[in-house]
Image 1 (cartoon, rainbow, N blue to C red):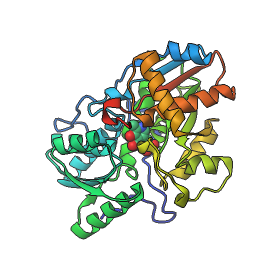
Image 2 (cartoon, helix red, strand yellow):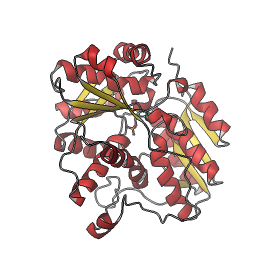
Image 3 (tube, rainbow, N blue to C red):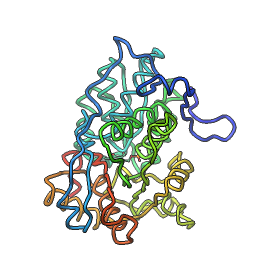
Image 4 (cartoon, protein in one colour):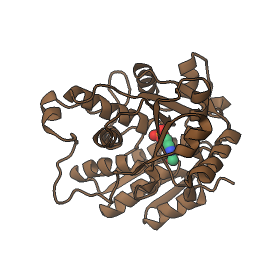
Length: 347
Ligand SMILES: Cc1ncc(COP(=O)(O)O)c(C=O)c1O
């Protein structure tokens, strides 16, 4: 099994490019683009004004990126597209992934397009719509009982036993190369770079990817300012928020949350996430389930947007950041709306 962690410090790996590559590529990628490169139309999601929510919060420039318009209904497709193009280039024919549901659906879809066999390990409590979606793409589903962490443990054991590639999107450096397109697109489209971006964070793939993208663009010399990147977690599972506040948090204290996509007790890249929050002058806040449900309803009532509870968590976080004046009246804030509401009824 190929390791995806540093042999010395055990931290997960990331890709870096020579300045020369950065200078000559529009967006540097870790695979050779050719006739067999697969896309199902990921990325280039619309950015819309959320002016009614802005008015409600007393903020003049609130925007959302409709990440749920990606092919499988979540932002994960950005990362999966790159991760599986690299896997295909290596000649991989069979893969194993573990997921709370959305990454599993995404990997299942892109695997089918690559004619790869996919084993998707999911918690047996994953929403039915996500499970059905994974099955529809033709992947083999392995439902695992207990907390989300058990699913990861079972997937790793299966890979070792069967000698199959573990493509874990949470460890893969290639997945982050896909999520970095989020930042490239923001810069390409906006004359004004947002002051703040608020992310729902479990393993942090979109937050880290965005930071990588902005940092590469800053290295080109074209980008002068990187937005403040804020992390939102559920109070029920808040390892990063606790570390950010300098508090201890025991994974054994984890409780159930309706924000299943960010119910992650052991994020392998937590140090990187904390560094990014601090370097970008962002913050980390925790929100409770009633807040999340309230914001899921508000998004639908005020803006006509039906999002997953996990995605609504970012708006509950936004409200806190407004109340603490972390986000000021005339600053611009962008929120990726990461997953489609039909995937998780959560009622
Ligand atoms: C809809 C949705 N939003 C956000 C996230 C969080 O992504 P990450 O774990 O990479 O922080 C997930 C993860 O599953 C998700 O499904």
